[in-house]
Amino acid sequence: MARAALSADAVVDVALRLIDEEGASALTLAAVASRAGVATPSLYKHVRSLAELRGLVSARIMDALATRIGAAVLGRSADEAVRALMTAWHGYVAEHPHRYSALVQAPGPMVEQAGERLIGIMLAALRAYDLNDTDAVHAVRCLRAAVHGFSVLVAENAFQLDQKLDETYELLIHMVISGLRTPPPRG
Amino acid sequence: MARAALSADAVVDVALRLIDEEGASALTLAAVASRAGVATPSLYKHVRSLAELRGLVSARIMDALATRIGAAVLGRSADEAVRALMTAWHGYVAEHPHRYSALVQAPGPMVEQAGERLIGIMLAALRAYDLNDTDAVHAVRCLRAAVHGFSVLVAENAFQLDQKLDETYELLIHMVISGLRTPPPRG
DNA sequence: CCCAAAAGCTAATCCCATTAGCCAAATCTG
DNA sequence: CAGATTTGGCTAATGGGATTAGCTTTTGGG
Image (cartoon, rainbow over all chains, first blue to last red; front, side, top):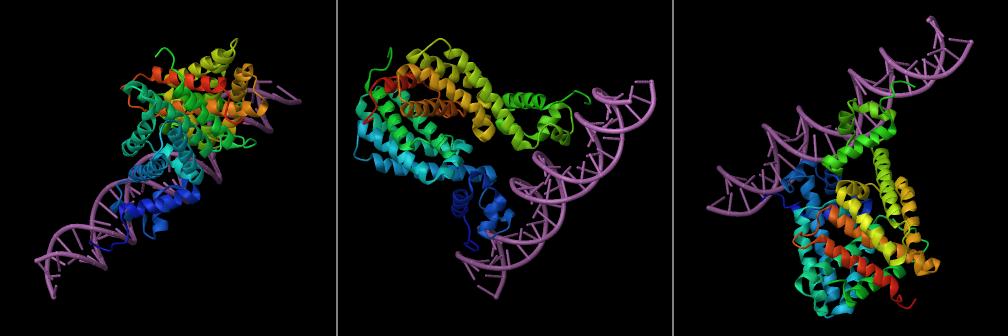
């Protein structure tokens, strides 16, 4: 190999720093190249396109999120697991709002793959509720919807901040848990 | 005035058709101009910038959503109102997934303003639960989070479609309603 | 020490947003 | 109805960002 300066991973690192500091919309090949101290076209030696870079970045973020949530859920089950999962998720968003925006803006297969791990973690967290396979799928979807919706809204500052977010989140956790405990309709 | 051909509203109309047919990412001044049968710079006579067009489009979408949901909620209260609200919301997303993506991609003050009407409708729908002002704010936020999260995920096809979405949504409605009925934690 | 691959660079192209300045049509005034 | 004015559209030009082509240099292996 030649100058071991950059690499796909290193480019993603730079991109992440850029996103953290300047927001998801600042992610541009020109900006990344500049931060990396390299000419823009040089990035193509490590990354196929801006779209691919977005995918790699999102996958990396999704992976970090899954790891953090997986650790938080470890050793807990049912209500406690759900609470830990949701708390960890929201914690990540609060710490890295721009990253979450980036995640939202870059769908695609790479992210999906990384997301499957997170879905596995969610399924495991719900195992104690004794749901059959079908119901478990529905439960995970609802959990995703609630947490993701809240995260998106927080990340883009869509809430008037005159009331505490933490209290809202407590209610959301309560909704999810109570919805999982009480018998679902006609099912 | 001169040739009454275009207008800001007409430009938004064209943009909406474009989004419906080619997706939110296809919204570009060049594409809108082409569809409108006009040169790109001509659009600036009706719209300040692409950013403003995005805002106008989003506001229009938010308005349509609010109108539809407002009509659905009319004459209902409590559980039935929540169910009607959520059903109408999801119905709009199912009919115009690309529009919902566009809405997500263009935050900003114009959308917020249109969104306030929708928030008012949500507050009204929850009135029958007899929540104090603070709890009502939290409840609306949770409702938004759940519905919006689900909508975003549906709009970007984030669910494996091997299970029916409608059943999932029933569970989500159930979660919201049961969470609103059972006493919230420590509050 | 020589070579092939890897990684960088510059130059060139394309697409899109945006600006500047010009022209024609429609409306308004008298 | 004629002229002034406004308005909406146009072409040309600029600038930024992505992407491609083709050249050069570094580097690791033999």
